[in-house]
Length: 398
Image (cartoon, rainbow, N blue to C red; front, side):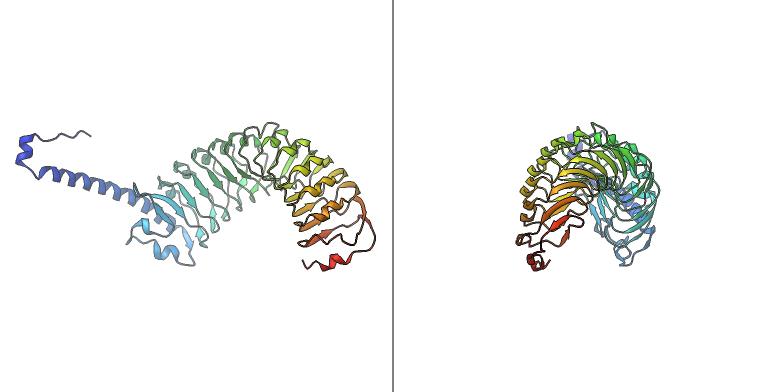
């Protein structure tokens, strides 16, 4: 815009001209601002019209055209442009669908409607929310497929779609989300094979949950090479085959690994000793074999070990008694043999012990349960134990 200033003579003659110009500019700004607010207001009113059940009358009473949209419940506006930058309708017991007009909230960076009863499919127009960093549609009743266009949300840092009824395949375009830090796709009805190579793109990802679906596939050898920030990996309850790639043991920030209930095989290599920050290891209900490596005793942050229902053999390493933070140990239904390490019964933090259905033997000592004040579950079925059950077991009120 070219602004022509009046000459000094004209300014002298018309001292009211400059204030008038500022008034005109301010009025233009207010008109533009009003138009933008109207766009956001229309988008939210479209959402309100798609709400079929609002039991607490939250939107019915708050979302009124008589007040500024920035004062509506769940709505946050930016201080600079006064546009809607966040929408949080989580845990409001709302029922309804998502209209395509919601994508007109072009300044939206945060969208959270988790723990409601929204249903139907996701509109592809959501790809227009280019500023979106946080998207949480978890714990609803959405159906259909995940739109491949979600892969265009290049600024997205958290994608949460757990506990819905999404079907079909997980779109490979999800791998385009190079800024993603958290991915939650668990508890849906996905099917078919997934190329887990998409995880290679997520160099910033910290949490990846793709559990309890019907997803098949295998973990490629270099899949975790670039995931130096990975802290939580949950792929349990799927149909994943193959072995654990060695690249996983390079992810030294890992706290939680769950590959439980798949069709995986192979052994646990000694490289697992690199994961010194690991707190939970769940590999149960697979076809893993080999011995439990003694280096597992070096993982002093471990709280949970779940290796039940596999084909592990050899002895339980006695060094496991070094895991003084251990709360749960599940080794039942394997081919383990030898004596039960009594060092296990000196871990005072233990709450659950399951060693049944192995070829283990041992004897009950009088003080065997003296140092387990928090124990509330004990399974030693089909072990070859001798001696008298000590009275200390019955002193445990848990």
